[in-house]
Image 1: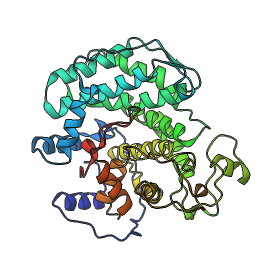
Image 2: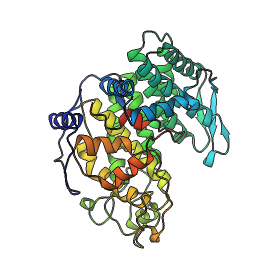
Image 3: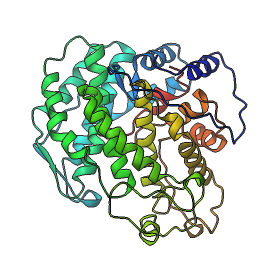
Length: 396
């Protein structure tokens, strides 16, 4: 397991049932871990030790993993009769208008990931075969994404395909067309996502998640390093903490150069508190997309030996704490979004909660309440899927 020593100790303690009694202000000192020279596989969001932990928990019929597994297997994504619906051109406009292949692509990618998980957990090769069939159908067909939402669509699908591909390539015996799939990721997806975006933060964070995952699958260190550098800048400018000063950091692109422009970009919010995100006052749905992408990238970096959780822990713990507090029913003060927010954070808390609370020992009472209430956390049908199954209390 590619873990720092302190994390190993916490993971072992968590495994034997030791509870962490950290205060709400507990902070683990930041540390820097040099990235490994060679990528670890499977290594996009999930490592082999993590997969083995999940397989063991399901085999033992333990909870919440068994309920989460049953949820996944009962979903349309696990169907062995699913017919892929690839297109040469996927056209996605704003608010899914038009939607020419957008839902089909995203859901086929989630299905491939679902089947890859089902293969590893059950050992039933039919699921690996189905995952391969889905990936092969798209790699033989797709050429580009068009219309206004093309970058985001590319990011969402491009975040999920490598998760499926990593599991199949590195745990299954035969995938003859994996080279063609790699070419698809390299030529159709990576050039679109890796330059980033000046749009709302959830776009660029999802784009960097896709770029990071694709780079791992391709063993492309240069692209990985480029994506991580951009990701770190955007994550730091997406979530405010008081250490930033009187205002949030400026995003790395988008032409936002003055405080007035920054406040407008932050949906008119001019009072900044720990954990507020650039899209909090827009709605919690889009904020959830951004927070989820941050956690996903951090989880992949941990597997790859360059753990970003210590650098991101204050932003993540405060942001999850703030948003889940309001999701749990606490009244919104007038200083935040005028006293009214649009909730809907989604099934996105397991990865960060496990990393920060269970591994690093940070107290996260609001997030814990939210996470337990939402279990098993399923899929948002975009790029998040089955994270109670894969990351709940996963010490690996």
